[in-house]
Image (cartoon, rainbow, N blue to C red; front, side, top):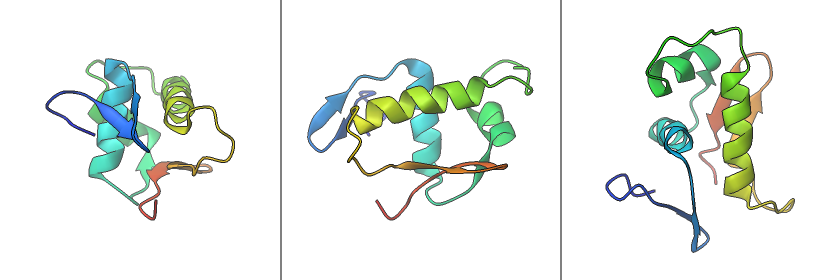
Length: 93
């Protein structure tokens, strides 16, 4: 991830992310291996007050995962779900 040029690559392939997906990935990368709750993600990635009862974070994480994995079922999953709590970037990858 290059925060100056807002580009992301994985395995040498460039990945196009929208602004929110880029911000979400940046937050995960600044906190590798740390459990990030949905509330923490909303507070750090979204600029406005978002209804915390919506599935906004879940939907954006799903889109981000799809782009990072490139649609390959054999790709190592970078963002792990911690059921009932939130998400974390697998620091072992």
